Image 1: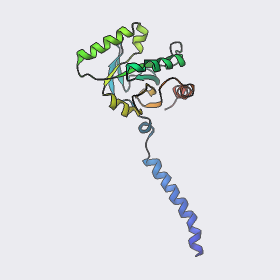
Image 2 (image 1 turned 60 degrees about the vertical axis):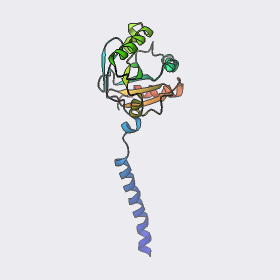
Image 3 (image 1 turned 180 degrees about the vertical axis):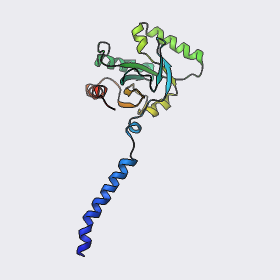
Length: 185
């Protein structure tokens, strides 16, 4: 009876260590948990082509993602709250995700509407409309829904490093800033 009790703590420790090792190897990677924007080619309204992954100009980019016209106010609250118009240390883009109408003429009409709404070259250089399957984009990026605008920190490969949804919030903004300013993925 004595020998059995002596091995019990050792066996329990080995079982716990083995379980931890299995979970570490089999557990999801950060990319799976946080998501990744799907690969796409788009053009900014200033006609510059953007290819994701690999086409983002900074190591970390803040993407203000809207799914409907009604979310403009949420996006603007982040621009104002983070002072993006006057803060050159943050690389950022507006990314309206639009269900692809499947026709170049219809895409051009949508782009013309966006051009009218964003007349300055500076605004046009930051606007990257993405014509895709909206629901597939949301799933791939790990976003909960399209009910609110999303604010994503993306690395050059399009991996989502941090996210927030809805109107500007200082606590969420601080977490995004920390991720934007971090130097290693």
